[in-house]
Image (cartoon, rainbow, N blue to C red):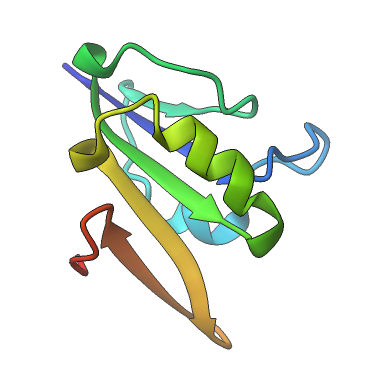
Length: 94
């Protein structure tokens, strides 16, 4: 089974963990990985990357995304208070 990987940009302090709204959209399962390091993964082993991107992490995210299959990247961003939208890298909403 392919992996689903959750990440927050910029990289989060390990004492804080992942951004909480990201945790609400990730499914449960043995194939789900919560990456605290935003490292590079083998795309062939990954189904999707679920990424929460803050303005301060945009440059870090762009550099990371250049190394990965854009079709597998799902970006979550805050658009209004307590309202989140998930988008694939091509801009389509999920």
